[in-house]
Length: 396
Ligand SMILES: Nc1nc2c(ncn2[C@@H]2O[C@H](COP(=O)(O)OP(=O)(O)OP(=O)(O)O)[C@@H](O)[C@H]2O)c(=O)[nH]1
Ligand SMILES: [Mg+2]
Image (tube, rainbow, N blue to C red):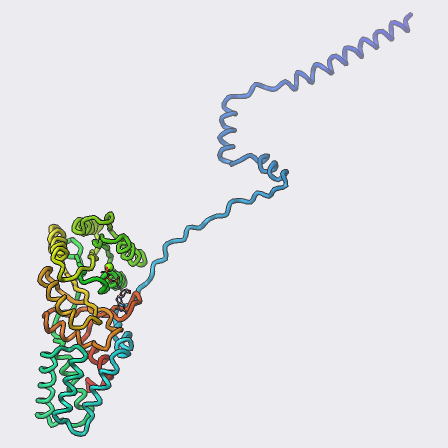
């Protein structure tokens, strides 16, 4: 009996312990109520930490490798550094002499003749006229050369060559001021306007001048007042963006005067040194278009006077260019001429004719399509290139 009692007690003890073993762990496992702040904190951390790790694992589990998106590096705009302007005419001398050698060699050949008779002097005249020097200027040059030869009793070809070079330089009036007014004054930018007939090289020259100015440490703004074609503004903008110059443009067929006005205002607001305004090509005999050009000038000058009005003349058009030039100077006050495409003509003498007819200095010359193929015009260097002579020969 005691045995049964003992067994019953043991069983009871086992039952009690078993019941306790089931209940206590349950009580321990009961989750504690989450603190509201914890939830917020966790979410914030998740946001900061990016996607949860499990997401990446599940991607891997599909067997498809998900690569991180490639880092696209936005290239910083590469601005070009234009060539320095000093010595450009000397560097581009070969461009000029390539097309001028016939002229230079022909003239020097004539001067080397044993006897400088009437026929020879006439041939010298002819070759100057053929090179577009112009009849009046040629007569003057040859008369002075004959006179000096007579007075000095000069005979050798070398001496004659030096005298001819001196007369050509003299005909180019080396005393003229050929500097471009491009510096700010009275707290406002200098304003330059570029004019000329179709295809003369206006836009290209605007771009080249912008490069020269940037190379000299100036800030430049371009105004695309050629609103006939959208491509004209694009062409100018391309030149500008290469050297970091802003271009102001209007909608296609906008009033060119208003675009030019806006460009100058923007230039004043942004504090640039120089505003360059490119205009549409126009034939000098189209009255309406010439009136439009006059209007562009008047409207721009509401901001203040234009500092330079540059006439772009294509050297290959020869004497025709003189008539164009005359009409343009009547409509806008041309202050300087840029003679383009001198690399493509054997008629470099047009420089003399242009200056003589207009009384306006040739300030720059274009010697190629390259971005830095624009040089300040220097009469002595030009004549040396024209005759194919070394500077030393003239200076001797
Ligand atoms: N060889 C040579 N080509 C030049 C020179 N200057 C300009 N050109 C070329 O002449 C062509 C016409 O140049 P543009 O600057 O577009 O002429 P544009 O006067 O603005 O023409 P429009 O706006 O249509 O009236 C282009 O092919 C230029 O590259 C130069 O000095 N030498
Ligand atoms: Mg143009």
